[in-house]
Image (cartoon, rainbow, N blue to C red; front, top):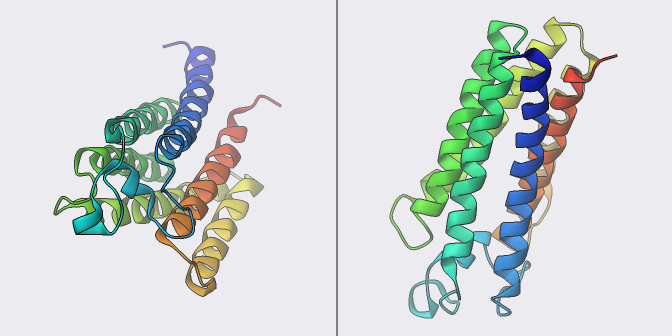
Length: 195
């Protein structure tokens, strides 16, 4: 595959994954006016009901669930494109973890709220994304990219903030985590911009 073409695909799949995640969340919230960012978890938009989860059954839960599956597939493709253009084995290692985190994101849609594995796949999506980008940060430092330090510092600060901020709901800390992932992905892909 042509290097310039594969780098364009890196930018395309990263943009599509970010847009897909936020559109999924926004559209799902639009159809479920009972949803509150300060009271619910984002996964409430994909399953559960008043009896089991203290919220009404979501209207059109497939929007959220299929949106998570599509976004997970886009993360997988994004990671694959960077592996093709990787600079060292540590970056490949980190991207392999990010591919797995994409799989876990897809599993959030498959094992929606109210199913046994849901909590496990939800938590491990964020953990795997963090492990992934910690490795990628190290790989960038090895290749003398200042952005590697920025990624690692961002990750460390985000986990400190996550643990000390008194979040009112699961949705708030999930949104925080998504924003952090979006930021570090954008920092990473800028290393592929030609000087």
